[in-house]
Length: 283
Image 1 (cartoon, rainbow, N blue to C red):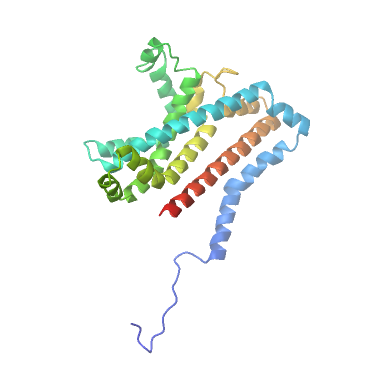
Image 2 (cartoon, helix red, strand yellow):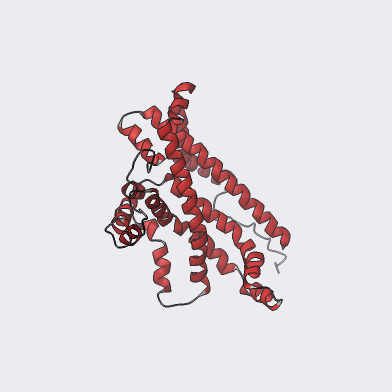
């Protein structure tokens, strides 16, 4: 109750108003994101269309596209499945070493990519701890596309786990208990009760893992072998162009990668919004 001689004070915002905040945000993003990305297209525009098309559609460059986007998709899909299992275990169960396991999930964030690449190569080489078992089964891990898949899976798992954990913590187990009391099987309860609520966060984690895998360089170059048409990734061929002072060619490939990544992420975001709208409609 406010007394008659006191007038209600307007709410004061801790942060500045919309205009000033938006100005800072646009300036910050412009300097760090928009201007550097625009520089890629500006530099690539110095080529004629025929020159640009020749570079970005050359057989060696096209082979790097297929390897980069294909293996990244496989790694992100794997992380979506097993990242969900890891996040579920960390949120729903209590067990010895839980805090240690939770900290290990963030290790790919903190570990330098070159160190990760060297470590994975040593482990999955033919004489490595894990590699010797795979090679005995006839599966080449290091210096192959399997090695690229392993490296991209390693660096992408934290994105899925950390995207799902807050949603799982807010997901009330009572809904699962209610589904079970109504006779729903575990599979039906998961697909009809749990998964719809997790799907937007799962797609977010998948998109982040996919985007990170597409641009990954340090951990891949050690374990892939970098063989043209076999294990050469797009970021590597960009570096090769730069080493040969072919700046225009490097920016041309970078522009294609940038546009393709943007289109893929836009598609995933549209799908995520669609799943959110379906979830709201069900509730």
